[in-house]
Image (cartoon, rainbow, N blue to C red):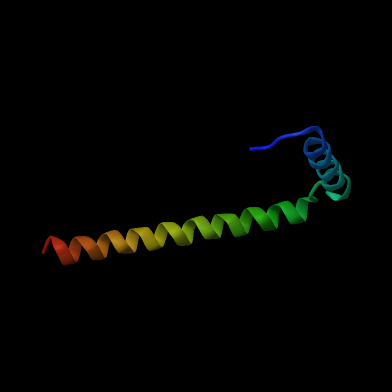
Length: 61
C-alpha cells in the first residue's frame, strides 16, 4: 500500500468537492428515504419468515 503526500492531498480535495455539492435533505426527502428503507426491511423480513416456515414444513414434517 503506497501512501504519499500527493495521494492524501488528492483524497482531501475529492472529499472537499463532495462536501461542497452535498446538501442536507429536507423533511420530505428524509421521510421518503425512511419509508423506502422501512418497506425494504419489512420485505426482507417477510422473505426470511416465509423461508423459515417452508423449511420447517419440508424438513420437520
